[in-house]
Image 1 (cartoon, rainbow, N blue to C red):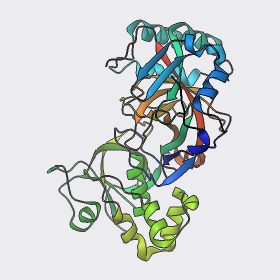
Image 2: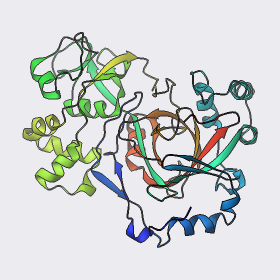
Image 3: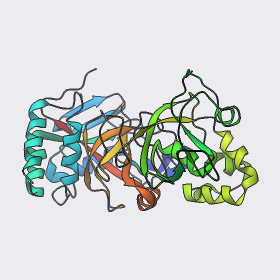
Length: 384
């Protein structure tokens, strides 16, 4: 296959969230109007691939719609030997508890055996090398071998079991009369709904970003802590409030991180209704343990070792190594155990950072380019 589109003509922009994304759900709502520019190096895809793999025509390739998987060797993956894979193995073992075509029984049993033996990193690396075959992921439509990596996390809010004082903003369970489409964000706030209230929080802007994330931790005023996770959404697609602020009030797009938007809204309290209600989407939650963050696969996600992906191309449970010299948390093996409605594309991932403010800061700083390698377990075959 020959490629003719020159990278100088491409300057491809990918969708980017305003630093925050959803954990523990099968839908993710995010700002898609910020853009990420990949720098072009003047070569087309053909040149790049043949310079890396002169014997490319002799290598095995697997084609899936706009995705090509090119067989490589582990020794050709930069940073593979140096990667600390203990978190990767933990995430893989957790994934083995779920029903998935990716989970080959014999491989899962060996993973559990190794994990229980307190293995060295070299032993974990050998496990993946012995039971998996690596392939470079190529985006045929975009004609790229690299894609966008962003980050998400679980926020912490302040709340109460009862409505009083500053605790005025409800975190709703799934409505008893739920249907699609349901009431809009504004209608829910103004009219109320027939639903149990899990708790009341003290900041409606924090609540809004909780809806983007999809799960969170609430510190209650009685000293206890609860977790809340996504259960359902009202049926309206997420609309970018960052894009709205940019178009309506002229704030430059490059400034519109989640932190900036929060501060901007607090400085413009008279505009909060207008901006927040521009987005009609609204999320309903369930109560869960406060130290859990469930992904779409049903697993408790492992910070910095699990990612959300576009499952049209990467099946849940698949092992993905991401190579990049632009973020210290990459050059690492991740398990694809979550997905997002706006995580779109062949080479696209959202890295789960964990809980709280520091995780949020790291997630907000993550907006980098990386190469993806899919590790296919022996015995796995794609189904057409």
